[in-house]
Image 1 (tube, chains in turn green, brown, cyan, blue):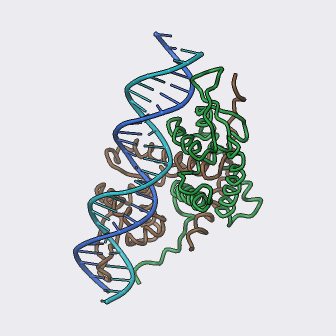
Image 2 (image 1 turned 90 degrees about the vertical axis):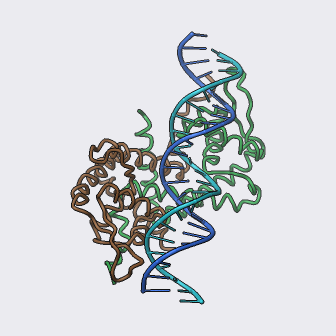
Length: 155
Length: 155
DNA sequence: CCTATATCAGATCGACTGACATCT
DNA sequence: CAGATGTCAGTCTATCTGATATAG
């Protein structure tokens, strides 16, 4: 016996590390479920794709710039995200007639169907990740996390 | 005016994305402060270095394998972390006489001093990140996050 | 012989930067 | 002209895999 077997005292770990691991876990949960969807097979769907789909479903047609702002991702990375969704026939790029620099992104027929599956996937992933929390805590956790992110974005 | 300017409804975003952004924010806060420390200048100190220092300070001499388990990082990545800390003269690799495969990692004189600065850096970073939460919420958030990570590690 | 520890090389992926063409 | 939008190339970092040498 060398040193006391350090019983995973994660409560003493730096917050940065805990957040990184939680984000890795969440990503893995989403990716695993995306990989099991038969209609999404062979695709390159990522968590950000679900976010983009959700944006359009919730706000109606948006530009890529607007999606990047809502999701908090770099505009250059949104290009790939929309490419993937378009390759799956879930989303469509139309030029905005009022401002022809922008796209007016909207869901296809298949996109509106697929969105239901994506919501289910996201919900299942969240349920797995937040398993050790009760219903009240889950709500509180999500709220706090949301406040943290939005707070640091107004700079 | 094209579409309703979607006022950052981060509460509607996938949890995965929120966690990723929070972890990015936390990492940036720590890195920024590490870069300002004069004694750590030119080094490659990362958040994981603080975690490793904290482990040794809290549990006494450990092996790299043990640190990887506590921090939840891959053993192969710990090599670089300890390399950096050794280059800064903060930590020392000694062979464990009882099992010469292992190292018995311990803090140097300078390491015990520097550890205080690292704790301060981590605390300041946490304070900045959790700014929108009150004291009770911060405690709760940390506790929930800790439970989430530990829960998914026992598999 | 099989396992554990530490190490290294490389693959992969996400976040970010800078340059550019197009359009307002 | 300046500024906004989308696109592309490339960098940087973190994470993970596989192979190897050494020790139990």
